[in-house]
Length: 337
Image (tube, rainbow, N blue to C red; front, side, top):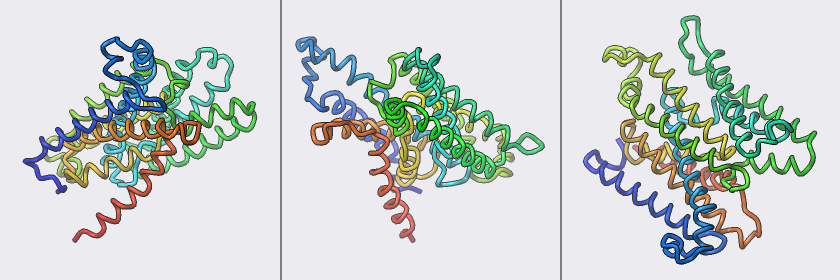
């Protein structure tokens, strides 16, 4: 049971919705240079409207999509793998996406396609890693063995990291810097295209809808496979569906934003601490809180631009915030009677 009682769940969702709307409005209005949001919306400030429509709005939308995708996938991976330390990157899909995007950045044929080629290659690389992990972690009856998913994911991520390091060591310094920026996680307009944002939105809505529809089955699965089967839930089918939907979310997020860490780890733990473990509540709650968290984190990177005269990758900032926050949540949970 979380800190928020069941009859206050509607108020919890209302608070998250207000937080997300406020985060979006702040992200649209603020940045390295302030923007007249009202004038931009009414058309009275033509230059501000151009900045809003071409930079601020797409970037804010992307941050919300990626934040929701990573937090939701982290939540369901922790559920199906029965591991509170599972995050979106632990099963190898992020390594595959990172390798696919890195190859797209250095191979001339794909690089000619621009940002769309990088996003497409990263997405396909992530799906390829999912297929490999699924293939290697099944038993003789075709059921997924969760401990092997973790092992295969760790090994595959290590191999992918080694391959990426090799690529960085043999390309020009400028290209290596471009790869580093993308891998650290960024929402800058320099590394994604409008088409990629819309495609990611469509994929995210479909996958999160599928996960929300699976929430009752996940609740039953949390009681154990035998109890779940007794109430008509197929554990193997549920695990497969949730695993694949979560993996697609991660592949889509990494394909447009690179590796943004800790969102998929800290947000699910925070939501469960507040409202408990009912997936009918935690899935939409994680999506809303993850979206607001990443929008605010990206806003902070832009607000720091005048101080450092450069824009820090948002993935670095989420790790700096998420690491101490996770330790605090862990310590707080350990102190409970």
